[in-house]
Length: 420
Image (cartoon, rainbow, N blue to C red):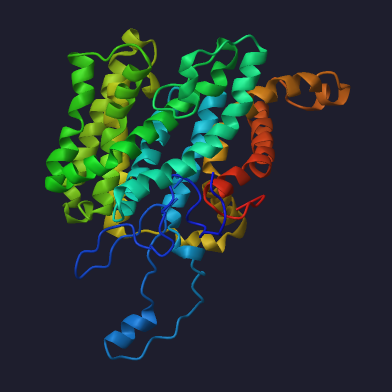
């Protein structure tokens, strides 16, 4: 992994803009300034353009600037867009919560994976203003080293527990298919479908963006067709590549709606049409999940690809359109220093949090078991509560961030730091 000169904060993981000077993430439309873009995780952050100051605007109109009544919050370094940063942080919290409690309704409240794919799609469209090969290579360079570092621990642990890898171990090098493993380690490696799907979207994005630009709205709508075909027509094989096809079809719309945000397509749409279409998608996705509980054994969207596709499509479209139409930036986060700092850490270590959170939850169980041997802990601590395990899990995640997060810095050719 080449490592040398320091790079801007924005270059911190696969979801972050690769251009140090790039502050805008939405194609400009005269005479309106371009919308800001998402930062990535990564498992996520993109820079946004600096808004023109009131003084500059007044000067351009030939009138003296008004004296501000109160100081405005300082802009984030690198012009970061805190709206997208906040969405990514919420998505990561929701992922950890779901893997702790297993709430079937969690995906209905906030479809984290759809949101993160949309943010990544926006950043990818921005990055592809540069040569496609360099962009893809850079994304892989920043994604794979943290994955390899994490995978080394998981693979060795599984082999110690009796796993004998075959040629399929190559998927632990480039995860274009689900990396193999044994049942002992399934809770750790089952989350890798997300990195595999992200990697495929990165590889396909140069072609997808060209197709999207030819007919944005028709292509966006047609992106819902593959999952319908998989549900009612041809079904992909039940293997690692079939799973990859299903996941690509499930989140294709979300990735492309990220393109739509970056390309300025969303700003040109009427609010009424967007809201009605989004609500229709939400209604269909929710209805399908609830109406087919007997078939799938749950209404959990993660188990029902068709419902996941339409629910995520409606939800993410509203989030991205809200950003594009109202130009929200969540600059108010700067007034809450601790919260702002947490959001920064989440975005700067998104890959680390995503990869290590399941291991943290796994380790929380034997750690809590030890607490039962301490009479005071047994009496005063809620050792049987899942909320207690949730808290211990987050303590272990926060330990993992300085221990392992520096790998993201190395992958981004940045000086390693304990915290971003």
